Amino acid sequence: MMIKVLKAGFYSAIQDKGRFGFANIGMPIAGVMDSYAANIANHVLHNNLANAVLEIAFNNAVFQFINATQICISGADFSAKINGKLVKLNAIINVKKDDVLSFGTIKFGARTYVAVAGGFQSETILGSRSMFKEITKTSQLKNGDVLLFQEQIHLRNPLNASIKVNKNYFEDDKLICFKGPEFDLLSEKQQHKLCNANFSISNDINRMGFRLNERLENTLSGIVTSAVLPGTVQLTPSGKLIVLMKDCQVTGGYPRILQLKENSLGKLAQKKPTDKICFVLH
Amino acid sequence: MQNKPTYKRFGERAILIAWDTEISVAVSEDILRFQNKILKDKKEHILDIIAAYTSLTIVFKEEIKDFEKIVLELQTIYEAVFLSVKIQKYIWEIPVCYHNEFGIDLQEMAQYSGLETSEIIKIHSEKIYNIHFIGFLPGFLYLGGLDKRIYFNRKENPRLKVPKGSVAIGGKQTGIYPTETSGGWQIIGKSPVNFFNINNKQPCFAKAGDFVKFTSISKAAYHLLKKEVDENLYKLSKTLYDD
Image (tube, rainbow over all chains, first blue to last red; front, top):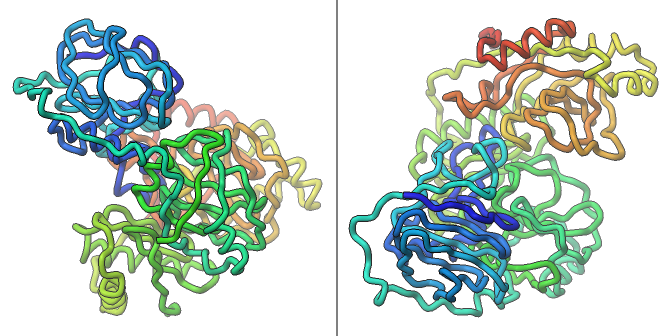
């Protein structure tokens, strides 16, 4: 059972929950940037939530189904269409042989997820199918690639399987955080600004980290290299903030001033350059 | 015996354990001993464990509900007498070609420091370095024990591309770039050895607690060994470390 990548677009890749248990050899976790959206896509299809999905960042990707199956699209709204006709998000979609799935105008969000009944069957490396540079054969899909999935004997009735997703998830600018290990080293003034000012997303965003535009006066020196996690907010020497995302390294040397809650990390993954955010302590 | 570590919550499901001390072999050993005890007693609850110079971060599978209770459990594990099977530690012999073609910063380093390039090489390849932990990139070893005479500041402008296998010095540290990446360390040589190979059962041959010794090799030997590594014929030389 196959899906052909006609146009990979800006970034499309296979991702699952990520690689765990290998931090001791320096392995980043990787995995879906927005687990909430990926979980919905799998859940609607009655898939295991650990099944691999297709992550598409920004729009312009086109796929063709070589075999019939069922899919669910969740996350950002890129005006998904089957054979040119708009389809619903967060619902089971029946696709027939030769159907073409395309994405166009961005309505909201930055990353959309396509789950297929039974999950994608790409290579598993160290317990995960998540694509990552030099770990899997490719780090992202390219035009002409073929994605494999399992044939499903028991298809679901699409009429009674959809989930209502609150659009607030994509519009909310509040990111809920814990204090990071070095939060208490900040002055009261710095802490106040960090938790009350608005920040905006810069153009420098990727799966390793999102840099923010505004500066926070920085008087701290670096730390002795120590663990960082997806969702760690680092304060760089220039005073700019970096929020680490799923492909981040396992250790770092910048002060860790906040730690995003996992749900907020998913929300952040749906932001675009210039979008506003603010940090709210848990 | 080290000072007792302190415990901090690190997000929804992680705890950062920190030792308030300088970097040393002794604290690294304490961290590894604690890590092994935790993995022995609580493995089924743990998603990942990240050791570093003076810290150990435990990521749990579930969200932490009762932080104090878990800290108490961890403290008990730390205090308990640990009758473990002795973990075998190895000294890995890493061939390095320090030829100018690979050690592209050696000349400048020699001018800056007043040492001959041959002295820098001699000092670098004489020492036995201990592996504190592995981080930064898959297979990047954080090595301790660099001789003070060859501390060199990082480059002001990091290189966008440092070739895979480059052996370098950054401040008080030395290391090997396991893949091509950007980096600001001073490059003194190149090793043909693969530090990360996804096709091996153990993708990284070394582990925290092991040791590394660099051996200077000629350019001809480098190319010969590189060919062996690429054809999967090369076998690293290791000796058991007796402490």
